[in-house]
Length: 299
Image (cartoon, rainbow, N blue to C red; front, side, top):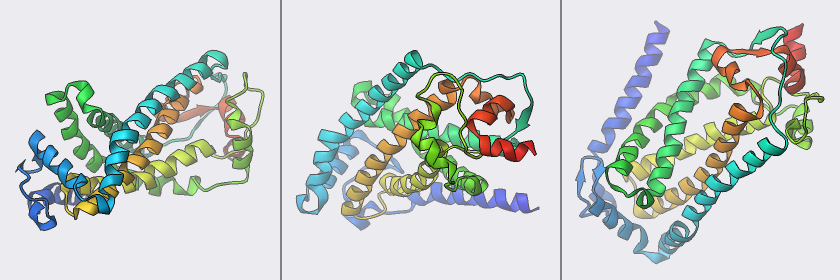
């Protein structure tokens, strides 16, 4: 019964969030003459909104315009280009870690852990991709292609939000900084050395994973908050400018860590992705990469 109530509350929240934009008024906050089909904005409407964002230079209008035109797109572009190149060099020069899969294996992630992780990850990936497509919309030719990803962005956010909260509550006890985490940072987790002749005294999650957890959940909530107002325009223009700047800056940090997480989970350790599919990690990998946790489960 409690599960049914919990699921019903989530559905009610999602319906409320979806329905609310149909009832607000743009004119309330001075955004007059904006033509809309409910919440779907026309191209001409975006031009009008752009004028509203930049016309009052005393209240962040100039700051918003300078950052948006001269910095954000360039920074996002170089993040997308440079980070994958760095990881490509790492893969070629140092190579991935390889551990024996012949020994005992331990259940690390149960069915609920995996389900919540994959739903959150899928929604998050859609948010990242659709956000980049919207940011570089003119280079994709605009039109229906960009519009399709714009339509995906909000629903993906509404899926991400409740599951990110569940994931936060599910793993927060394992994400607290521990003494062995300092050693991990000093040695860069062993990823800058070839081979696996090292022991990392960390728990179930290493400090890199912990950093990503806090940024993805706490940062994700800030992105949802600012993104909601950028989607609904349910505040004054000056606040929208501030929210847009925060959204873009935080988005860059999240994009960087997202790319790091992708590389680490897909390429840096051979077979590491299987642990989030099957739930199991083998003894050899745990012993070297999560030694403190290995000693705990081995008892």
